[in-house]
Amino acid sequence: MSSPRVAVVGGGISGLTAAHRLRTLLGPAAEVVVLEQRDRVGGVLRTVDLAGVPYDVGAEAFLWRRPELRELLDDLGLAGEVVHPAGAAASVRAGGVTVPLPTGTLLGVPTSAARLDGVLSAAGTAAARAERDRPIDWAPGGDVALGGLLRDRFGDELADRLADPLLGGVYAGRVDALGLRATVPALAVALDAGASSVTAAADRATAPPPASPASVHASSASVHGELPVPAQPPVFGALRGGYAVLVDALATGVDVRLSTTVRALNRLADGWRLVLGPDQGALDVDAVVLAVPAPAVARLLADVVPTAATAAGEIELASSVVVALAYPEGDATRLPATSGVLVAAGEPVSIKAATHSSRKWPHLTASATDGLVRLRASVGRYGEEATLQVDDAELVARARADLATLAGITAAPVAVHVQRWGGGLPQYGVGHVDRVGAIDDAVACVPGLAVAGAALHGVGVPACVGTARAAAERVAEQLVAATAR
Image 1: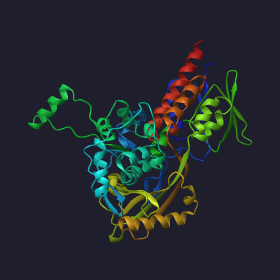
Image 2 (image 1 turned 135 degrees about the vertical axis):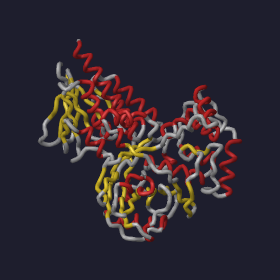
Image 3 (image 1 turned 90 degrees about the vertical axis):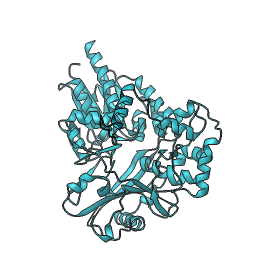
């Protein structure tokens, strides 16, 4: 097997990253084929032209502290395209008013330093503060619904007004259906280690690492003017030209076959056969990387790795919509001086969040000379699919009505883009870590097969890149070993 052939099923960020890594590891003689069901690559990364400016209508930003995407951008020569948000703070709509999003929480779980009186009532704040003094009965290694834990420990207000909008923005889900161990793993680890309360666990999970002697000396010296105070690293990053810059770079030089459906996956004596869509035949390869949503993983592995298929079939998906709008700057479209607003559960509006992009991302304003402001509204959570079954005009009308309520924006937009994400986000429910462990363990026993994607170890772009690299490295190692035999 001097020139191996590998199929990557799925042309999203996970599939494209896996293909890129395979080409690097296997060399130019290897044949790497990406099979994508849609008529474009990128998956839930999509950049559109919004009134003449590249604008992301899928994933918006990535966590800067995670190294996986930063390393990929360096590898592709795209590090210079990274931009960071301005200093504008976020807000939350709760109890009929818009207030600053409290600091000092871990995805809405309060630390002892959290100030909650702005977003919670006096009674809700008192209930939340009392949690740290209540003993907790926690079974190490266990998993519970995050919403149930927060309601029991802090009260309904904190779950509905803080944790639900924050987690809803990440997973398009409801806090009551999300599992603690998969969504806030650091909190679960702190509870396993014996934290006396959820507040104490949040304190432990957010504590900075111990300072080294050198850094202590540097901090002391900076106080006396000998050294500059080191700047805090940014939390988020994005790309100046949108995620299209990354997608295009990954797809360059790759054999991508669009509008190609993989109907079945069959094991051969020396590899795999992919049965393709009508009139598309079949493709025989030495190895396969599946970088597709969980239901597709379940379908393709049903006969060849049934244990993994069963676990993947238990991962549900949520649908959502992004409505992007551009407005002329003016009194009727003056954005609040915040990066955006999250919407608490129970508020009488349709959208779950709005991002004030022209306030949050300085590069959007710097690159535009048209005097327009741009923003995006997000609609839809898990279980709300029926509310999205309306035409685009109705979704735009709902978003505009809500933006008038939340931000006083009453002008007509000069440009609009509606992006639907059917089944776009996997739900990390109770037991998700065990389900993913079952997938990983079962697939690891099958040579020439690997799985990657958002359904596994995180929905963010860096996490997807990490699973893709691991999948490619596993397959490449096996192919190289087979060649050496």
